[in-house]
Image 1: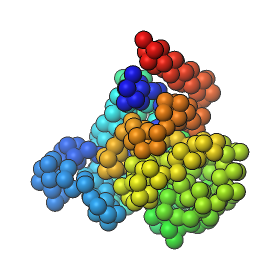
Image 2: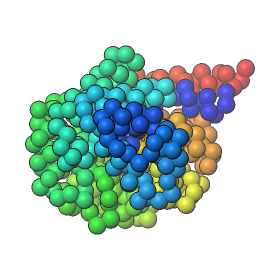
Image 3: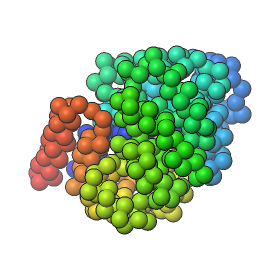
Image 4: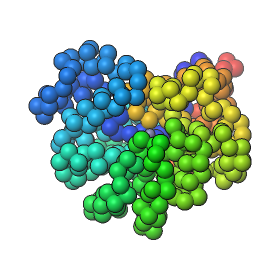
Length: 342
Ligand SMILES: [Zn+2]
């Protein structure tokens, strides 16, 4: 069996994916027309070309334009359902989705449209395809902590349908410490908590996210490699890292995938996982990330299977579901090796 087919059939969870970063050009154009939103690209082809941006600012321009075309609950439903359909096709059994409500409410979109659209699509995907998913609203770190507390309150009617809360956005200059009270309240409410840290920021931000915010999982966390004691502590605690290799390449967090710390961290015993971040913008969905990593880092089937196992270990899912998912990985590995022999 070719490694590409091995990846295609490998059961996995995806734990770091922003709904706003998964809008494909066709859907983008359709939403702009549907809502009468003026955009600077006239066709799918023009827009597809724009997706090949070369710097952070071009990406952000496109990303914020992408958010502008999202207006109604149906829009949020459609983009969420699109992603979950593609994830299901990549044999993602379980997905944990990021959503940035502040980017929508600040444009005047009612919070209920955002939440009901997204949550409805997640339920539809579970009923139609059997893929389970959970929602993790992410507050934007360039905004004040006060605003994050307002968002936490505004989401109160949906608290029972959320997995946890996260922190994202422009990292440098906005350390985790800025949101200590927000995280304390989320934890007190019983939510899982995660934070983007150590993507462009230093290892000290990763430490802060662990020690001060007491996160259950780190998003990215790449910069931990600069601090050997931190790497050892992460291996020991098995606090998971949601790595996003193609995103890191596109945003030049690494010069090449061969230079990505993924394999080193995997071999050091950390619970690292592979995810797509903003798949429509960063050149690939989760299986594209697995394949690109195997090619650049020679992970082999055992390494790829370990990443899939880690994804279920790291997922916020009930233990019975976790055991079933891990058994499905073992099953696939065994089937693939039998096929290699014959
Ligand atoms: Zn992210």
